[in-house]
Length: 428
Ligand SMILES: Cc1cc2nc3c(=O)[nH]c(=O)nc-3n(C[C@H](O)[C@H](O)[C@H](O)COP(=O)(O)OP(=O)(O)OC[C@H]3O[C@@H](n4cnc5c(N)ncnc54)[C@H](O)[C@@H]3O)c2cc1C
Ligand code: SF4
Ligand code: SF4
Image (cartoon, rainbow, N blue to C red; front, side, top):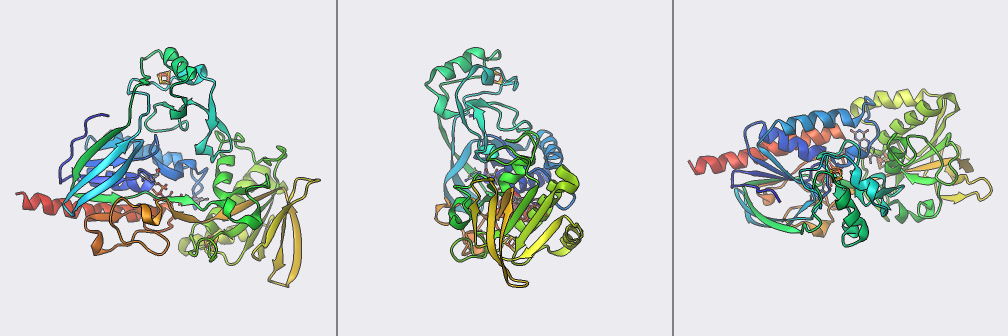
């Protein structure tokens, strides 16, 4: 592990999604020393797995690239990937934080040439594509990953494949004897930006995500659109590779439901409206989208986006909570069953593909925080004096879109700066 120097005037940012990156940059650009830690092998968080952003339909890579440049230009930010906080002691202005960093087995010499990936045979599920495809045991998490450095899957260590990877590397970048490291840092304030995870669609049993091939979740759908994703950017049915032109979107899948998530994630309505546009972009007038909804929550400036989709004749809105989905074995279609509440008639509608608009929940379980923080019923971190010098940013504080995550991260950075400024004044 590279040497990391921290004092109680340093700000620790936990989680390097768009929120953590924003908080780190805002603090560092005012002259504060920042340590940014991320449990995955790359920074950027879940937006790296989105195809396009609503409302402007631009690519997330664009904003991420700008942030990467700002990070590279700022010597005040130290980044630790594959790292997690295991314990926090002390209080505001004087924290002692224990961090565990897993081995990457690849050092700074790596040029991302890819020779190691070609040399190995072992393949594992690709978590970046929500396990819809496989990747090699020596891999770059995704094409624009930062840092641009390969990773060796720990399950490969000790096998012949690991030796093959090392032998293939022309830059002496592979170190098979790297071990887990633990370090303790002194910091003054902590920005907690560990983000969200999609609600597990398999738990919504009537919708059959775990047993019907042509039922996917909204986050999986984002990956299907990506030219570097599991289907090379084509909307194809997982069951047989047929073009998926008739697509159903089911809102509130596992949200606003006392058996699953009680809260509304606020994002999934907009995500679906955006995804109907993906379908239209791909198949033009042949595309047909049906949105099954309870009510559409497109707030503030998003109302215009909603109207634009409503005006599209190829997009149909059905006010109904789908009761269950069955597979038609003969056609492979996913058949949605329910009652249309406008007219109260039963339907059994076949679709090529069904997309479940799953909700967002905090990525850290309620009872698994290594630091004392006040959380809501859902497990999002509250803004509370009892949290001392720990401030939540982005989706660690609520289900938010990128714009609101960035605002929340800037506010958290400001609060953290105020804490370390007080420390600096006290120390003269
Ligand atoms: C289907 C879907 C589509 C969406 N589309 C859009 C869109 O088009 N436009 C838009 O504005 N928003 C969209 N969103 C919302 C967007 O994804 C979020 O606003 C954004 O990801 C929030 O960023 P974040 O940094 O708060 O969290 P995350 O992106 O979750 O980042 C958190 C980071 O913390 C890391 N981490 C987690 N736990 C730990 C730990 N213990 N230690 C260290 N690191 C940790 C994670 O690995 C991750 O890198 C969409 C959401 C969904 C569900
Ligand atoms: S580890 Fe070596 S072989 Fe693999 S990508 Fe990096 S430089 Fe190339
Ligand atoms: S944003 Fe829409 S789909 Fe998501 S929980 Fe709220 S109402 Fe349901």
